[in-house]
Image (cartoon, rainbow, N blue to C red; front, side, top):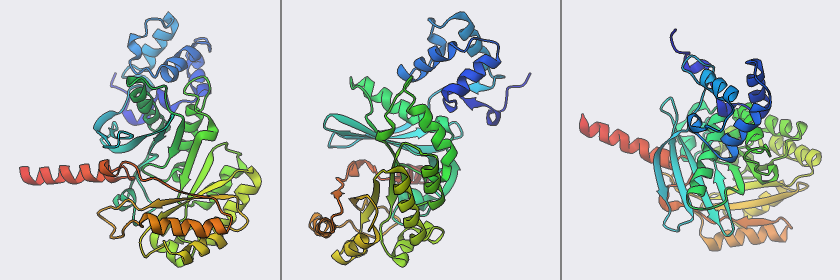
Amino acid sequence: MPPTPSSERRSLHDLTFSALEGEIVASGHRAAHALALWRALYRETAHDLSARREFPPPLRRWLDEALDENGRLFAGAPSVTADTASSDGLTRKFLLGLADGQTIETVLMGYPGRFTGCVSTQAGCAMGCVFCATGQMGFVRHLRPGEIVAQVLHLQRALRARGETGLRNLVLMGMGEPLHNYDAVMTALEIITDPRGLGLAPSRVTISTVGVAPAILRLAAEARPYCLAVSLHDATEAGRSALVPAGRRWPLEELLAACRTYGRQTGRRIFFEWTLITDRNDSPAKALELAAALSGIDAHVNLIPLNPTQGFAGQAADLATAAAFQRVLRNASIPSTIRQRRGIDVAAGCGQLRAEKTALDQRQRTLRE
């Protein structure tokens, strides 16, 4: 019998606990076996299931059948194409290879007493933000839930290898637009926050969006328990659309209305991301426009000096300019934080490491030819 095509198989990491339990029960085995397998996958972050001799014989038989080349499922971890550590010793960036040859970026950021993981939700991105390396490369495909989960498992293993306890915070702020891949992202987060396994607290998970207004309303209607961060970057229609082309599809007025609805229905504060670009959106006048736009929204603004990319000519605002911008927000009673830029020397901005690796591979192929 020929092997089952890979396109028809699902990863074990695509399955929520209830889905895994259903697969096991449908094969004639006891539901209780799901918990033993779940704990091995997520509490112990195991990826070599064949070595788990402590599994009861029925579970081992089920795994042998399900993971056979003719089975419905597969297991395994992404390959590590690049692993770079920042000179500050706090940021580590991985370029992970997927089964179809695509690569995605995953970042580990250390802070006093805690670690934050930044994961990708797509290979490439369709939103086209002009200053973002991922937006410049275009959209390739959505990630499956298991490919999102696998990034968190990779970071957990990396932390345990150095004697650390594990991630405290998770941000979906890597390659891709999470709300463009809504269903897969929500499935992945159900797995990641399941207390029987990885158990990350939902309140410590942040979904960062360029502003997909209908999906923000869906988050509110479904009472999803995660934090929301909205990339704004300009508080005028023309200015924002020039930086964030997706703003033409979801205009500023529609986006801010969705944010107000989200705030009312969830009672949660929204984080607004503002990339500070010299002479583009970093003036006190721009800060006043932002303060007016956020009127009536429980908001916190993260001010982020630009991470330069080869595809965008803008420059990062200096700290004095960022501080002046922040003073305007403070006077308007809007809390804000000037985000510390991390991992500049390892291309930690979204898409930068993949872009650099792709350019290097292209140069090497040219030289060989």
